Length: 226
Image (cartoon, rainbow, N blue to C red; front, side, top):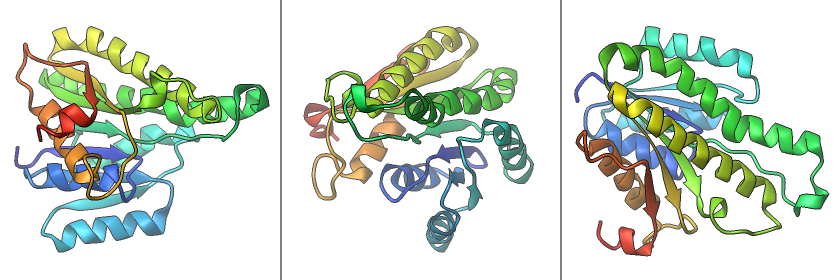
């Protein structure tokens, strides 16, 4: 594992940073991507203070044209990503009839379209190597309706479909694509603690070829086994 690169897109103080720490523990170099530059640099500094290799890459994922340059920088400064974790999403609060078309389109750009754009950037090197892992962070609103969070639910449902279709396409090429569907609220010192969830990402990545899951349902039953 030493010398490989894991890119966390949508790196925040919860799942994103926890996943970064989990993969860093296995010797991965970590690329942290998110919009808030100052917070992102702080996360990278925390990881480096723990002895890990981590670099902050501030980026606005709503600007799809910037994504190719972003991944070119990561490849040049670290290495072509071996693992991509897409953890970003955007949400406009409100029931469906209150959403404007422009609001929904903007949310879907960050929640789904940018995810595909990131996937397309990592695929060439993964295909050349014949291996790689792509994990997209899903959520319970993809499966269970909650009208006041319609934008998030629509985004997560679309992201889930993207992950499952990528899995079907890429498995024969040696690339593991999957979604982690988190069926609960992320909270410290509970079964939904970010560190527990990060362990699920590692277990999904570590699945051997032939036993790959396209979806990991992270619920209380799964969490209690960690």
